[in-house]
Amino acid sequence: MNAMTIGCALWTLGPTPDVGALARQMEIAAEIGCQSVQPWIVHSDDWPCILDPEFGSPSDRREARQIAESLGLTFSGFCAQLQGASTFGGLEEREGLRWRIDKTKQALATTAEMGGNVITTHPGLLPEDPSDEAYQIMLGSVAEIAEYGASVGVTFALETGQEPPAALGAFIDEIGNPWLKVNYDPCNLLRFGSEAGTIQGVHLLGDKIIHTHAKDWNPQTREATCGEGLVPWAGYLGALRDIGYSGVLAIEDETGNEDMVGSIRRSHAFLKGWLHA
Image (tube, rainbow, N blue to C red):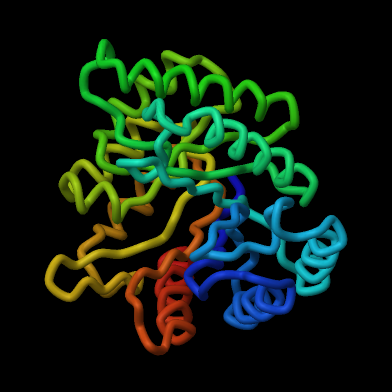
């Protein structure tokens, strides 16, 4: 089995309004020792993104890809996080839904253009009751996006959030598209669930997990430097090994630390220590 690797979710270091900003972030990740990066790929007024084709040019994207290659970095995935009127993701909200579906499809196509094969996002708030109208709306929108992902060779990965892992797994099974997978975030599951559920969720979702975020959480300090919070790393990483996961642990730091680079560096050292133990 191939070993897990360590990457960096680049938005941790801020927005990327131009190729220069993106290059500096990739240089930091490479210097720390990350083997891959996950950039943001959708633009908004408060979070500019040069990789969005409605904001940047094809030459910008070619240059960004060349810079990553020159640094020895691969793209573990890209993030196409959108916002609905009420929820983070909004793929279960009718208002503005067509735009969000089409924008996500555009991000899938851009990911393929960049040589990537995974897009991650929080799709929205998954209702507990499958007969709920919002559940059915999300079912249709996610199915349409996953079908498009299959056509361009890019997996659409739903990030674990407020719903239990079993509910997310059942939702994916109902759609039944192999190009629909999971981006596993242990911090989110701990925050909205339990330590046991964070570990058990790995076994429940199994080979649906194609990408992960390495993030920690502490309700008192709000610290997210890996190893400095409450995520049960020994059990969690052990569970990933149990299911044969050999993908990335993409560091996503939400500390708001003034020394963000130092925080990412500590996360990398912590994860490296566990992976080589």
